[in-house]
Amino acid sequence: MSKYSSPVVTLDGPSGSGKGTISLRIADALSWHYLDSGALYRIVGLIASRTSIPFSDEAGVSKIARSMQVEFIAGQVFLEGEPVEDEIRTEQAGNRASQVATLPLVRSALLEWQRQCAKPPGLVADGRDMGTVVFPNATCKIFLTATADARAQRRFNQLRLKGFDVNIRQLFEEITERDRRDAERKNSPLVPADDAITIDTTKMSIEQVSDSILLHIQNSGLTIPDK
Ligand code: C5P
Image (tube, rainbow, N blue to C red; front, top):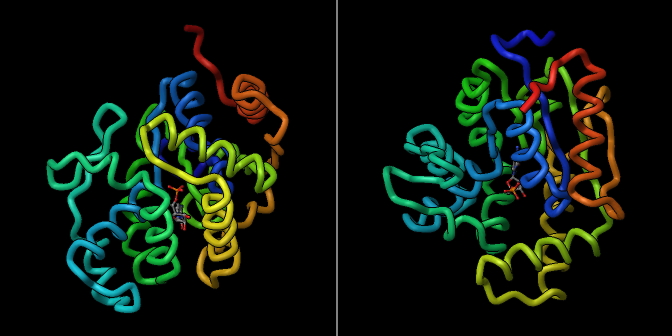
């Protein structure tokens, strides 16, 4: 059992590894809460760019992270009541997020916010450092990977579906650059926790990945409710 008031399952990995889609399915199968930690960094980047606070201004950007009013309602993200889902899902927003995410003061400002999401009956937490830093005592930790080509293709399909005009080559370069920045940063880099189970999803369907994770969750002693 975890040290938190509720059990936590963490899903970490690079962009396009399938974390978002899979985490939502797992949260649904367990009837648990879901934390999309990437959205928090995306919103910090959005506010900084709207208010022209340079990403190099660590104190200024961390102030945003400490004071922003964010709500997740029915799969949509709201900033002080304003729906910002579309605006934060672009690749440009992802890049801004990965720049503000290198700032230690921003990460520490978001730490408590994220930990408070561990509420009964349980939490599925999706991000880069869920298993290493935010929930080191999580009951079950999963690290999803896939080749850079497969990840760029998935992001391409996802963004196209949302109506964004994207170029696969450019997307591949942006994703590779973002992953390099996430993996090489000093603070909470993108690495699997020592006790995480790594799954390469390159050739797997969403159902296969979900089934495999649910099995690991069961093996860690948690119960999957009958639906
Ligand atoms: O997961 P998503 O693509 O929305 O994350 C956007 C960016 O936010 C990532 O590239 C990463 O730099 C940052 N992030 C992070 N730690 C997390 C979640 C996201 O640094 N737990």
